[in-house]
Image 1 (spheres, one colour):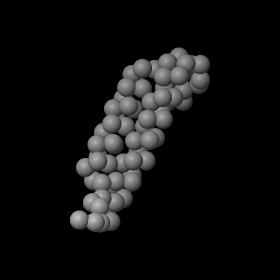
Image 2: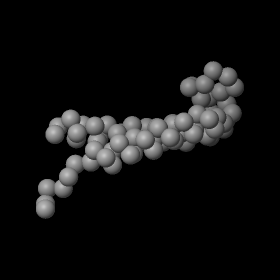
Image 3: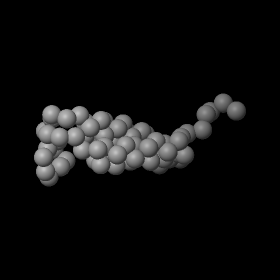
Image 4: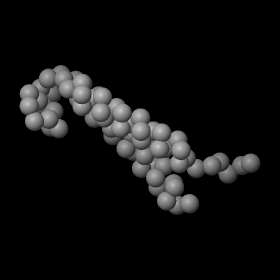
Amino acid sequence: MNNKRSLFWGAIVGAVICLAVSIYSIIPGYDHVLVTHDSTHTHPTHAFVFFALAVICGLVALVTRPKSASK
């Protein structure tokens, strides 16, 4: 049961990080460190991929969420 709780919190942390990187990739004018070319422009492909990863992490968190103690 402890592994399920760790996976739940890890998925939430992963979703928040991926969402932040997705927003960071869309903002023009900043030096994006995750690209190999023209690092100051927007990168919609990277933003889409990280947003998709955030959605997947969110779904994993929903599937592995702990059950409530009261029944």
